[in-house]
Length: 312
Ligand code: ING
View (tube, helix red, strand yellow):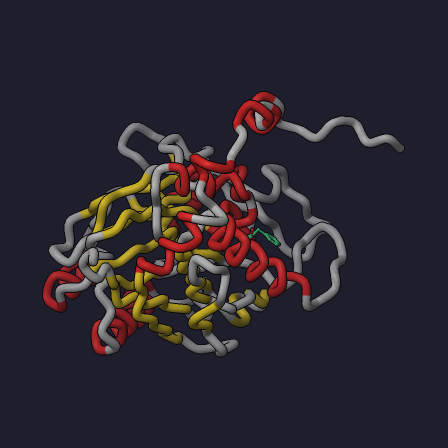
């Protein structure tokens, strides 16, 4: 009988972070949710993408202005140090997303994994950057991640952490099956991610229920098809007047949603006692990669980027 491999896992869904909100006020919210996560029995708390600020890629501005207002020049730094100090005091790890400006002049949409001693265990830089790089004034809002961030250069790594193996991704990454598969092939049993997803995309009409559906479809499929847990933490509500979907959730390796945030405005912590033994059956049977995958037929996935010309 292998030792029980369990983890108290919390996902912290944030209400809006408006551009007029102070950094100190936002940090206090994060501290309150970290304390609530600890109180619920969590050993790890997952926070959203770009958690310290508003989702600024909805605005057009010069890179220098964006960097000055929204990027972190170091991690930790005085603005966020209290979060690291509280994590150490409480003895809880956390995952959080932020805009990273590197000392040598590079810019990434980044997330880190921090252990209960407040040491940064791992870093991920967002690979799939959605939206556009040019200014589109006719749009109701911009989505300028391709302008403000470079494509992540760290790939999809995994780390042995709290008696399991974990990986990270960010927001749009969760929609691409390759994201989970690359980490699943490394043996990840939990992928954590933050997201900031508008309820309406800014370029074509889709039925109002679809953004919520596609969010859950993506993380449930990723979990199921790789026999892994997925924890997704979003920002929700009207942020600077733009509505962001919530639906933060913890998904089991069989694809079932075991915990889901219900709110549409407020900060909300959800929790589940994750048992990594739930990966075992699916990995032995349905998604036994070694037994069932046929890589000799998968070449196009890495050889070809775009879709072939459509027939009409
Ligand atoms: N957000 C979105 C996501 O993939 C997006 C991208 C933009 C979706 C606009 C819908 C409408 O969830 C991020 N930050 O990747």
